[in-house]
Amino acid sequence: MITRLSELFVRTLREDPADAEVPSHRWLVRAGYVRRVAPGIYSWLPLGLRVLHKVEQIVREEMDAIGAQEVRFPALLPREPYEATNRWTEYGPNLLRLTDRKGADMLLGPTHEEMFTLMVKDLYSSYKDLPLSLYQIQTKYRDEARPRAGLLRGREFVMKDSYSFDIDEAGLQASYDRHREAYQRIFDRLGLEYVIVSATSGAMGGSASEEFLAVAEIGEDTFVRSAGGYAANVEAVKRPLAPQQDATSVPAAHVEDTPDTPTIETLVALSNERYPRADRAWKAADTLKNVLFMLKHADGTRTPLAVGLPGDREVDAKRLEAAVEPAEVEPFGDADFDQYPQLVKGYIGPGAALGLDADGNGIRYLTDPDVVHGTRWITGANEAGRHVYDLVYGRDFASDGVLDVAEIREGDPAPDGSGPLALARGIEMGHIFQLGRKYADALGLKVLDPNGKLVTVTMGSYGVGVSRAVAAVAESTCDDKGLAWPRNVAPFDVHIVATGKDEAALTFANRLAHELDEAGVSVLLDDRKASPGVKFADAELLGMPTSVVVGRTLADGVVEVRDRASGAKEELGVDVVANHV
Ligand code: ATP
Ligand code: MG
Ligand code: MG
Ligand code: MG
Image (cartoon, rainbow, N blue to C red; front, side, top):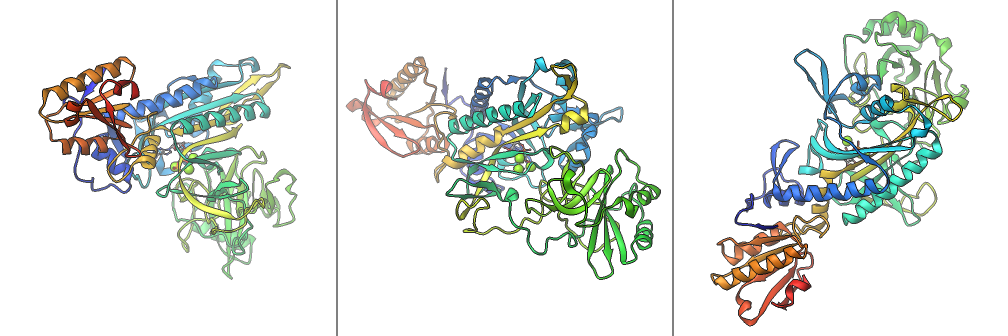
């Protein structure tokens, strides 16, 4: 099929949109690929949708190639599964919540671990059913604090998310490796310059995780790499603990006086009675299940006490008093950390521990001895100096859970000794996680193993920002004239520009378009009655990889072929142009 510009639903704009912060955003709007509806929310016009579909198709082919099966979940979801994993709370204000007419809480899915876990639990029951990988390409919602740069950080966006289900660690590792390779093929095919960096697992939970970052100045992530192959998001760099980051200088938390937190009187009384040196106590909770006390001493230092209230939703003063029985809290440094290998020293309470991270990342709060799940970071917060503190992960934490990242400078040694570090910025294109059993545990996904014993399934989760990729590819290829798509994702392969009033030009352009079309080349034909200047400018703005200018030179039996990316022009005989292109 040949698409004629005279009929295509598009208007190119001569002015930059007012909110355009980065080139890809400016060009995608000016070239008529997308239109803004509200902050972080965009409509796709025909040209943009063609690119989106091409990116989706590349992702789909590579997921199918590793044996993952495509499904699709709704975006509108019930609260309960997210309540069971605690993400209803953990996601904080980023979660778009709504209430249906019966008053039931609903959400628009930010990611679908819960739903996939439940689906597999519904249908599968034996180790013979595994391994299994499922994926979807679907619209996600996150009420981002700062929607930015058009499609790069939307509040509604398209993600490919996949989930692997395995019986054991070796299986999970194999599924993870397969996804990692598929991601390399995806980003290679998209023509992106990218790095794979170690990452923190953030709101997803879990242990091993890596990000695929497209190298770009305008990226929001900073990463480091060494000539010797070390590469990490700065958030995940293992580095020595900065002197001020010891367990007694945890910054004060954001203040939140919620009805179900204890009153300040209770806490002060409690702490004074139990801890004569303490003049004030505050509570930091990642959830109401797991509560952490901070004692603020008269000399201004703070002592963290980790306590767990497993399963409790209602935290009343009595329970809290019982929970902070000093006998239940091991003193700093003397505790037996065998069950918390991630910590070198700290406090252990029932169901939770707080201490210095063995990797030197700061202070770490663990809600369960199992290394695979339940880790929480609480190395900081924002406002200091007020009363009861209630620190909620995801709401009060500025980043995905790691705060107080010590500054890393260009030339600092790589932690693995592989040379000096170089700093650069990138756009997170994909993120792969070994989730372990966090979701399967919370939602009860178990299968029978070969010995007839019920075992909990171990999972991975893997995301690609599909709509973000459209912008990232545009960003890495555009220039000061507009978009310049690589062939793999361009809306059309060839843009034929017919110029001049001469009927012969249009006739030849039409014939060439048909010839190319029959050869399987997709064609955009500029058959408008506009000046050559307008047409050339639009061809550069719209960014097809190749254009063919049919005009004045036709009389000499030649047309001009232009390569959008390099700007190279060459004249070709009318009889050979179709073959050449
Ligand atoms: P970011 O750090 O950019 O906020 P994230 O770590 O929160 O991303 P994940 O939860 O890892 O994102 O989701 C998987 C992928 O979805 C990301 O790697 C990214 O490509 C994409 N993505 C996440 N948030 C957005 C968004 N707001 N708009 C567009 N794409 C997004
Ligand atoms: Mg995010
Ligand atoms: Mg991220
Ligand atoms: Mg991520």
